[in-house]
Length: 338
Length: 302
Image (cartoon, rainbow over all chains, first blue to last red; front, side):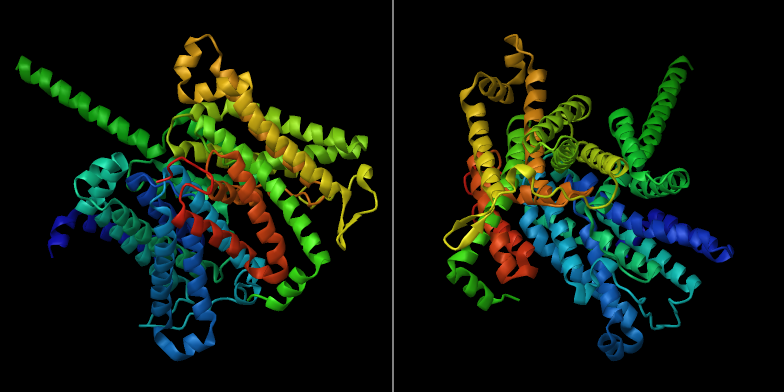
């Protein structure tokens, strides 16, 4: 109850955003906006959950896509298993979703327990190493995962509660709801005292420890939650593509997610989503002109990192703050004169 | 999952043992060269070169082309090393030096961008297909017999060069004037610069030297591995594992860890082919839990 009162503004915004998203999806007959937005939901959850680690906690992970892929694979594999869908019947999809989130969370507990204690640099390259480990497992365990072909043959989606995920409208609304709920969970986490503990650890872990914060435990909780949310992103993409592919666990996927955060804005909550949209559009536009997208994207990254040094929303935020300050200064002057 | 019969059969015959040990040793030596570059650069500049694998790839492709053009493998290896070193110096001056001391995110991103660009350039110049160089003409000699096993002469050359370079780089850092200046600059760069030494030049040279080590590894690997854009990432991840096991900043540690991993790989491919990667990560996890500074490292990692 308390939570609803405290976050009523954010909840209203979230509800309004959901209404808009659903209206776009259902109101436009053409499939393009739905496909575009569903891809953004998946990439956005990956980038936003990663930003909980990078932006809020100062844990620079280079292997976050592993959890994204793991979520997609668990979800897809469970629904492809006839034993599972046979036993669970109509409850298959929700249960597979829960299993994907919890399963990924448990995997993240193991990886996180090894990694979060380490210094920044060790953390970055161990997360990368564990991601490549998962990638090589996916590639070499052909019987289970289909190797480099990915999960083939589509993912069956038994109907539940009148929701038929085979239908593109149902699927879109389902993904939109998942997305908004996850974003809201992250909003509540980052704006709660827990979120401010994360920021304190980022700014000065030693001081946090002196104040009685169990730094390792808080970092681990954040790591696990953000990995589970990345898994939801993987589930959305698995639903969307009706499969799961090893590239999701490739290091480039993590690099892309990091760049989305940088591009959108490091210090703004919704920055990573804007970054996901911008990168997606950039990719599509570049692909129209050349097949060598990687060079162009690489040069853009260099330009943003070395030239601008900030993301889009960081500029907007700075501009906004400057404007506010100018207005306050002007009011002060007027006040004195009057 | 583990085929004990095959493992026991291999370990009990000296021929198989020799073969696996030599192939383990060459995997280990390549890893050692790449990892010692990573560890050297980190030790002085306190940056992790996430693009180090690209210099391995650059070395391999440069060597390939030189060999195709001239037919001289020694020249090819030299071009691979020097080419990677020059690319490394350019990369340091133009890109990495702008993010020294900035947060890790920026360093990661520029390396990510560099890898994307280099991989795509390689695709444009050499094509996306696998290239194979084959054992160079200089080394097409009958294999040496040793305790029932066969050892190709090229393998001996590879191990010899790697050990020579390893010893050389330790001496370079500990005994020479260059090494002393670089180590002093690592501790207190403004002070060294106040003594009239151009610190930036030394940093760039050291970075280039580290990249040249990766280039040598690539050039040495070209005859025994296939070349492909993106070949750098696999060895990068493995060289990270080597640095973690051996201890960050320690070249002897990297040597020890690289041999351990090489042998795990080659013997594992007989006994547990599907679990080779798993075994490497298990060794790394155990080291991190019980000896987080690495086998021979001193620096704190926590």
